[in-house]
Image 1 (tube, rainbow, N blue to C red):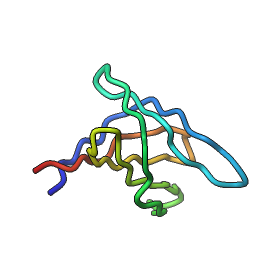
Image 2: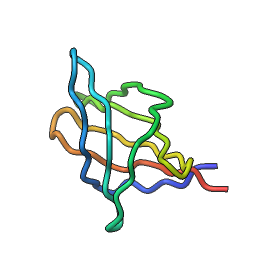
Image 3: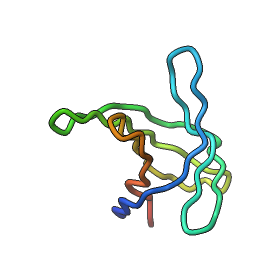
Amino acid sequence: MYQEIEEPVDVIALFEKGRMRPLRFRWNEKVYKVVKVTGDWQSEIGRYRLRHFAVQDEASNFFELSFDQYDSVWQLTRIAVE
């Protein structure tokens, strides 16, 4: 089950060979290291395009990050909860 968060976050990402990959993000004063990207997809909201990343941290927690390509803003969209 996922919990909707939809909060802005700071992300360090790697841009290489035309691809983007989040490496770390800060949420609620804590830094999370991304150890695995488990999914990568795009969606469109009107003229806006969002890039979504399903990621896993060192403690095996799952998060969904999104990047608004129009505003260049990152957001923590959802987290997995049990």
